[in-house]
Every structure is written in structure tokens, then in C-alpha cells.
Length: 190
Image 1: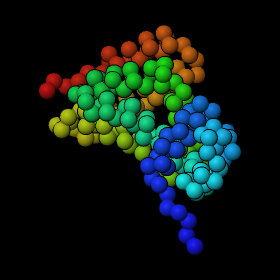
Image 2 (image 1 turned 180 degrees about the vertical axis):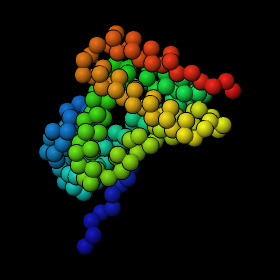
Image 3 (image 1 turned 120 degrees about the horizontal axis):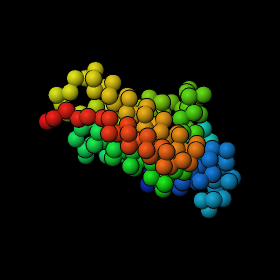
């Protein structure tokens, strides 16, 4: 006998709520009962929609990666040139209302680095998606090697600044450093 099919819209809505719970509480409380209680559903409902706890955690990491890219990728897609794209990304990701989500993002990043086999896909996309957007922002005539190098430096610098901001809370100092870095980026004339 087969079970009832998964309602994918319901699963997507539940997943967003699980991610919100995880953003608020961290990974340590990711188990069936606390999540189910917070979402006002039964643990059986979560099992039906996600399969196993590891599958739910994998889905959380994937949705978190998507949210992170939504906060960074569209900014780079709208802006022309590395400097403008990087500034748009910094302004979005360093905003105080993004703090909890990026705190979880870095926790997820660390967890995926420790257990890459347990979280397939996360590490493959966590740099590649944003890198591709930053390369595209440099225009079709950009040298591919130079575009990749510039995108890599922007990603590493902004992520480092975000980690510093999250660790210290010293917004003025980190913002000053970010402004200095962003001013150092020069876009080629079109």
C-alpha cells in the first residue's frame, strides 16, 4: 500500500516555516517534535513531507542557499559592473534585518564543510551561483579568467566582512572597511 502523495505547495510552505524556525533557533533544535510544535503540525506531517530528519535538514540548507542567492544574485543581475553589483550585495546582506539569516547561513556553511557527503549540493552552489552572477555583471567582453578572479575576491571579501560583522557587531568599523573595499573596485568603461 502506498502513502498519500506529497502536496508540493504544502511542502514548500512548510519548508519556509521550518527555515524561519531554524533561522530563529539554529540547527540544534532541528528535530521533529520542537519543529512540529512550533509549526502547529504533527511530527507525522513533517515525516510525510520531508521523509527523514536528514532530508528535512538538507531541504533547509537548500532553501537557505536559495534565499541567500535571492538576496545577492538579483542584485548582481540588475547592476552593471563589479563595483555596483558588489555594493548592492553588501547593502542587502549587511542589513540588520538579514543578520539572523546570515548567521544561520554561516552555521550551515560550516556544517556542510564538516559533513559534505551529508549535505550534497550545498557546497557546489554556495559559491558558484553568486560567482556566475558577479562574472555576468562584468559584461560579455570581460576576460573570463579576470572576471572569475574579480568575482572570487568580491565573494571572499564580502563574506569575510559579514563574518566580522556577525562576530563583533562593530557595524561602524566593518562598514568603514566595506566602503574602502567597495571604493577600490573599478568598473571598466562600457
